[in-house]
Length: 318
Image (tube, rainbow, N blue to C red; front, top):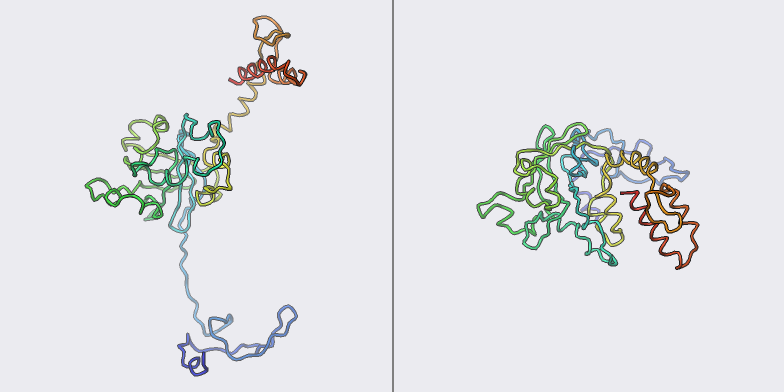
């Protein structure tokens, strides 16, 4: 830029000379003396006015991990100002989504629970019924958020379905969230709940699925959560996603001690030679069976007895 162009360029305001006249030292190095700096490069300019920047934070902050009061679903939320990104994962007795199924799991596409199936919410003819769905929300007033399918997924849904142009509901809108201190309540739209996997819907009352009920969640961890941007990658294992999004619920963790205590006190009565169940014989708990297994010779001749011990241990756990 020429000197003339520099002198004629619009300025933000009067420039105050550096009160130290460029003779300050930084880390022992003498700064060089120069001409007046542009205001964008200055700090300590007494003539600059203080600009007020209103806070965009919305209270309460609802970032964290939640569990539904009847343990029917988990909720993961990240909040930034008045916007939230969230994921709801439904609990199910059907384990097919969480098991590799005996074949080698080596492709990300093998995981049926990843974002496209979630975000479409079954709006596309080929979309699967999933156990988890992504949605976002924007704060309106008083701790209330309107929920919808994220924009990055929405455009892939036919316009007639998105905008309700076919006379149906506006299916991009998934519900309303009410935020409280450590708790949130969500009223999902009936069309959205109708897309939930049938094995998960069995956990919910008909009144809820018809739109006459709400889901109430309690927060048990206020740390930011990892959504699909981070976990839907080739480098992340199937088991890691399962553990994070579909892990044990708080009440299940609370019962582990009781379960372990009951398991410790349970015994089976067996024939000490064949290891088969008997009405009379020697009694063993789970630790005793493990000791019997360790005492067997490590060869094929003991395979049948070792298999009997495995069956006995399974019987104790059940």
